[in-house]
Image 1 (cartoon, rainbow, N blue to C red):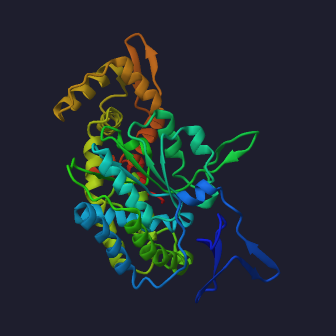
Image 2: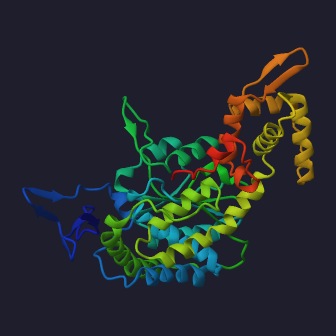
Length: 410
């Protein structure tokens, strides 16, 4: 393997050649019939990011993980869970190029100053970090993401078009239109500092969420101290990447107790700790409170409630169709029973059904949803996506329920 490391002069990185046993650093590497040499980077980019100077022994995976977690715990008084989740994210940035989704860290912080200090500390530990502010979709598309940068974004109010772009960049192989008929690949890890009222699902799958309470004091680490931290962790994390990169595979960890979105994140994080089942187990447990919150929010989601009602109607077999009007009344009543008092109109429910791809037809009594075989299959697929089938008793006599019992492929 060949990795970029900090250069000895100018804005041109040196190269580290890893032969599987040790690493050697030089301005150029000769291997076989080829000579490798790093390109010069834009001076501002070279100064804004961090590259390790070398690689060095990291001890064990557990020691490295605990060292990162303790760094954030002692600096910002994070809980064990929060510091553990941040450590998971930092380690994953070094192995994202081997994962199918790029885990992201969303930091909800009403105190922007504290949040920025967290980003600065992340820049000491993450792979090729780049701190950004006032990000626009065009600016994001212009970044040299082929360098596998970790974006540390301070954007307290995220506009919808930027949210969509950040969401798309979490998935490998999802190219976006570029200039002059070309395409760009923005895949990569990111930590986003934003205000607490941004909906969690705006960022897609693979999102770690932490919230920072308001604080009148926080540690302001100077550049010298941050450089000391980077000089300690960056070479060890580079060695971790070099030794484990080839071992990373999509994990077969049992994450069936989680919602689909959390399940993907759990498998991605678990894959970052190959050969360490204890650390994998601990990582999975860190995600449980976040998943429970997702489930609680889903109970108040009108899409979920509509699927839940239709799923029950299909299994009751009492009706061959249900009117949109009655479906709206039942949905509003169920939401009220769960503490949600916003009333949805029949027109809104009609659009929701269209979004869910559940067909309707009109007759003399109004718009109806046929509870036929096609609707049943669609509702069962949605129930599986929402993990509804896991929280209800499956019907042994229902063929669609039997299909829903099959594990979701990750």
